[in-house]
Length: 225
Image (cartoon, rainbow, N blue to C red):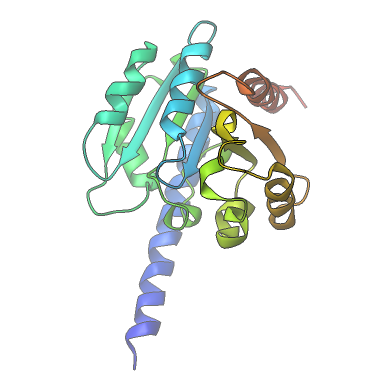
């Protein structure tokens, strides 16, 4: 009869410790002048393809690095390294999310002051990552047109905790009969006034607009006063 309260207590302690370390990471990022963007989504949303395109585009004009989390293998890190930027893999084993301890360990030896942006690609999961602060400045949640328009209604916590929503694979929206208006309404039902982008890593649609929004947010954060 006492098992459930004990589990809740342990979980609360874990989250409190994570929040403390995330706050320390946030201070460290701020002092270094690096803007941190985390990406969350379910598996197969096109998150890695999206990030690879973004790293390639931004690498021409900014100093960027990336951390990528996965349950096993370094396949995503190898893929992202093709963009020509520093990339490190975090293998979580059975853990379905990244936490602040993992991020802190992965940053060992990196000179953050030499970066403008750090991207963190979380493990593909729409439940676990919602509870773990990583010290990021901006959290982006992605969903693909193949996942259905009701994804935000099924996983409201992760959408409510994000700053920007990105709908991926928009180039095949017609083929899968994706209803953009319904998806947008569902996102805004969970997070009113949330900024939403439609993108395609294959065609490049929407990537420039998304990138401009991120750059604008970083500039606003660094603006004196």
